[in-house]
Amino acid sequence: MTTAIDRDQLTLSFNRYLPAPCEDAFEAWTDPEQLAEWWDPTGARLTRCEVDLRVGGAFVFENEGHSHPFTGTYRVVERPAKLVFDAMGAVGTVLLQAEGDGTRMLVTIRCASAEHLEQFVALGVGENTERTLDNLVAHLR
Image 1 (tube, rainbow, N blue to C red):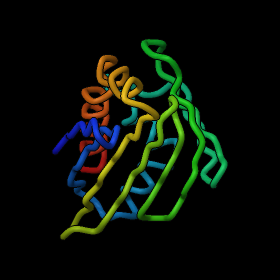
Image 2: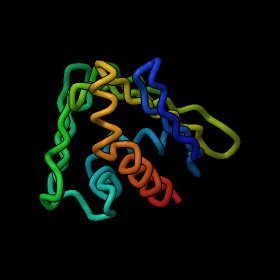
Image 3: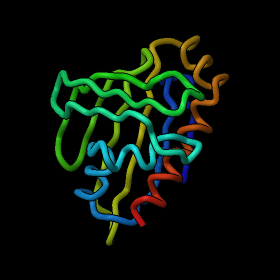
């Protein structure tokens, strides 16, 4: 996995190879039952996972209370290649592209300002996202 902080572009980026076809990876990102299994960086199952998978649709992911609920709204839903959503004042993008027998995934979090990016860095968003994506890789094996 490659993780990068680009302060000029105000982004955190995560590049991963997933051991599954794009359609399976997209389902893992959008099916509440699957999301509940891998989303929490601690590895615990989410206690609440709701997804309204459409442009303008909302999502809510809650854990056992060790962090605030993760909520957002979908901007783009292009099965099986792209998701764009607003959450925590940032824009998240998930790009999926076939590579061999699996999928190349690029996740980007674009912050609203340099201060916002530094808040995310200080909160450990990078490390927690890495753990979450480790969970996704394990889930898709």
